[in-house]
Image (cartoon, rainbow, N blue to C red; front, top):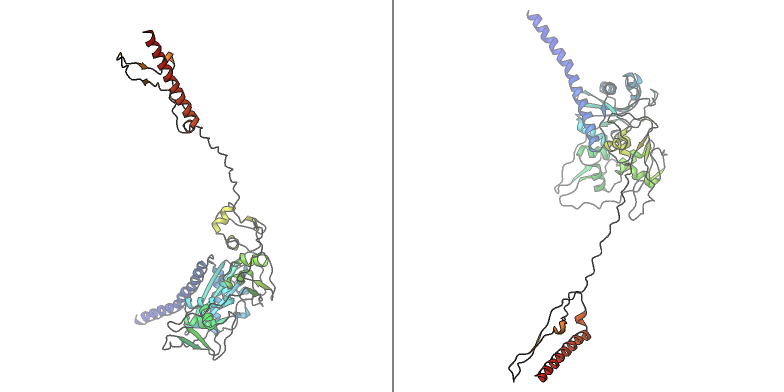
Length: 448
């Protein structure tokens, strides 16, 4: 009974020991893929869709690297290459592969290496591939990560003897970090095999800061014994920012997408400056303008495209990003469903439909009426003094013989009172009337 119990315990321990590496692999493989997808989301790109066949191909290569300690090639078991491994795992489509290994290397640090390596960075920001799988393996204190990205469909499949233009493998050589000086600055003495991007990753500082602090260009090389400023002294002013380059010489395997990403500029601007289209082919050694020089006038604005012709392997995400649209905008312009499938040759609208602008109706302004002067007729009376002899009050009415002498009054806007001759005429008429009244009174006295 005791022997059976011990045997059962031993078998359980063996099973746990066998299962534990699988759990570690799955967790670390998931971790690196999550890091990659989060990096893409942070840069406005859609995350890779998980594919089990690509994950199996990635895990196969991670196991090979851990078993044989291989860092110098993408070749795996039986002379396989990334494309042949993906096909053997059941994947139909074209693939590319990133690998990295290092002492106690974590998933976040592995992503940092890929970001700081131009070739591996291009794989992270690609829009040509939409699916991915990751693998992880460990041998002693060395960790190995593999990322395989792919595009399903009828993409061309390269022969198994081809390395498929995958980025060069990365093996992280441990770097001894320099201690801060008395003034707070950190200066690193370059050792054999070290590069600027590896120093940036180890010291966890942006590569752009190292270039700025040391007055170096992006393609600069460092040599053994060089002193590289990692951190400035406390209170030290920042060096002047160098004028960014305006042109780029195309290297083998580069595209408009990778060049725009390297210089952190919009691909649409690069195409505009160089009179290129998305389908243009670049030749090694070709000079491409990536930004305008200070004071330089931009070229004439081209007639904006209205439609895009879908090319083989393109996705709605890639087309939307090319023209600075969101996926929702592209779908709205074309009345596309969220799960719509596009095919080569399809015509997609990339500008919003024109909406006619209604012509406003003319409005008339009413003319205010012109005020007319009015005359108010008011009876006026004149009183005379009492007669001394008869003590009879005699009054002469202005309304003699039924005639009423009006007193002119004006409203605002009348100009009658403003004319002296009119006032004089009125006074003359009043005086004449008074004389006539006096004459009548005199005649009556005579009769009496």
